[in-house]
Picture 1: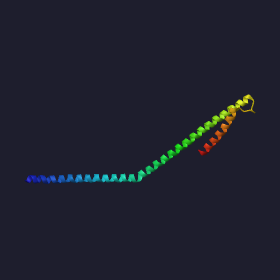
Picture 2: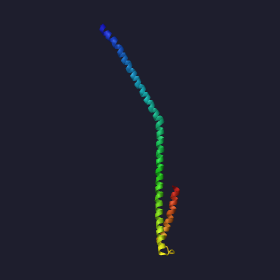
Picture 3: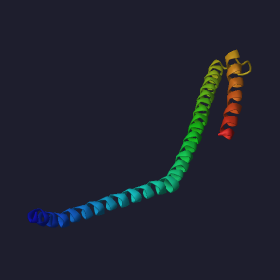
Length: 130
């Protein structure tokens, strides 16, 4: 019928316009997807290796600092032991001085002096290594 043909003729242009708009939208979405994929590839190629390298360097630095910390703690402990030995030596020498018999050191004074000398040597070696 003429009326059907008239409706079909008027419906087609709007349907065609809607189809064209949908195709344009689809093409726009595809372009966005391609751009996103390109950016992801760029990130994977350029930035991830650089970040991995920085992470490795930071881990190496952390390991080095942990080793240095352990060395310094050992040196501090040895220094504390040396100071304790020196304190014991001084106490023994003061004891000798108080008795007035410096020619006959007590066994404690002799041992304290020997320990102090050994601790001094050990502390010097640790300080040199640190």
